[in-house]
Image (cartoon, rainbow, N blue to C red):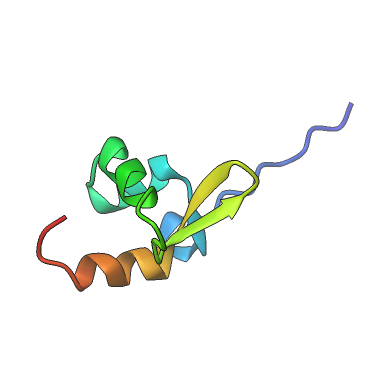
Length: 69
């Protein structure tokens, strides 16, 4: 059996992140990020079926543009 190598990409190089990666990247809690992703027309959510991913650049811009979350 041939094992596939897992490709590891640093979070700051990814286009999208999981909720867990976004939490680790931003020091914002997982529950708070999930709550933010539920906001209608959230600018940084990407739906892949039922899965929600965080668009990294839009997420960074959203954080930079707000003084309170």
